[in-house]
Length: 368
Image 1 (spheres, rainbow, N blue to C red):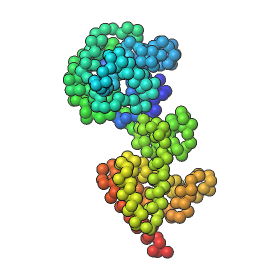
Image 2 (image 1 turned 180 degrees about the horizontal axis):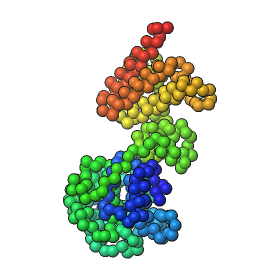
Image 3 (image 1 turned 45 degrees about the vertical axis):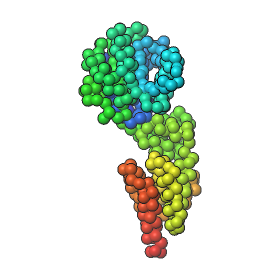
């Protein structure tokens, strides 16, 4: 069970025990940042509860599992925030088909970001449909499972409408709500659910999965894992879109940091802060920090360069900077990343970083 869920070992163990002992709650609220496996786990639980296989469950081979994987099982409902433009004058069957395709895309790739464009929400009409169908016993399976993704996007009317059902659900019905922002869920819903926190994934967990499923090299997977901030959804997007631009800016910034020409880094700081957002600059600094750490690792191990690195930038850093300087530069970059997290003005962050690193390097030059 949970073979395709990345990390979250405590949660896996918890649900394995709960399912095997028959002690599942009637409603769960999975919360945590995007890309940590909330929806993936919800589908796995739905499949396990209705799997017709005799051995390991879910088998993903029986009629029930196949139907859930195609979003065609009558006892498993997946609800997501939608936005339908009324101006497009779509027929009801066209709207239903569009929603179905989005749902199927999500169940097939639960870590992928699958959303509708626009101001999406979960309407009271959708919740009314859930309430209407809840009075019926399961048609084919053992349990009815309703998965509500991004439950914080329920309208207030929808949230109030579902309260009674969460409080007194039919015995054969299980709710699994997911949320990225627990604070946006109204307290009365939170009090009626068993809350399960999905922690950000570790870099090692993301790296292992990227290498296993996409056959990329260790260094590329390390960079992607570090800039994904615990989200496998973000990792997949970086993998698809590439990180060439981030690498290019990282090389340029590092080159400027090591130069003495103040005009160059002033111009560059203005260019970067005007053209790019906080996330991009944070990614750039994270990549530089990885190079610095690799250079530090080389200094500590005193290994042959060919044994651990194949990057001219890392070679340059390890050849031209002392161990103590590398550590100080590493600290300055980490401080800058922390300032980005606090939404400090980008231009000032970059300028201060270059100035502080130049002070570190000038101190050595003046002593030589």
